[in-house]
Image (cartoon, rainbow, N blue to C red; front, side, top):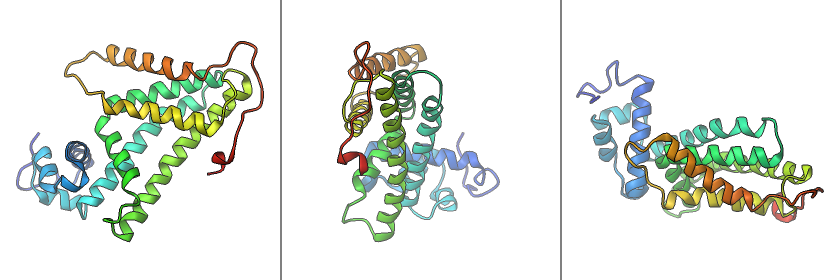
Length: 228
């Protein structure tokens, strides 16, 4: 659906219009990066004028922040239920990792934006307000990582995961899962079953490396990095 010149009318004020802007912004930032992407790029993707963008957001940076926050909301919404479900730590970690990957594969552009935000936090090109805003959003990412750390620790305690440094294990797992966005690209009309099968294979490789040998049980290991 294309939005006409009367972008800020009743249609332009709907939540649907805002969601379309976020989707378009995610695609533009993924393809061109934050610095090169423009509001015109986003408006063209939506099929509207910049007036619609400015109705919902003050600037391109505010669109970026909203895309980042939405990306974190979506992945957490998909992953968090598995952290609190039944089963061993390994079983829950595998389910969380699979949900994370499926979210990445369906919301690939949003994941790219989150990664850009993490890298840009200390950029000298940003104003203080912008750095502070990114720092706050990166807190959401840290909380998300801590959820994985907790389940890794529980898996080590119940004997389903081998005894390694908790922080190192969680960070290595998440880094490996996130690295899939470096090579994975959506294929038009690809069956959902194929995507799910691919996610399952990747999780088996990654979580399998943390699996404990039968009969192993003990307290999880930690070091100073756990306190960061």
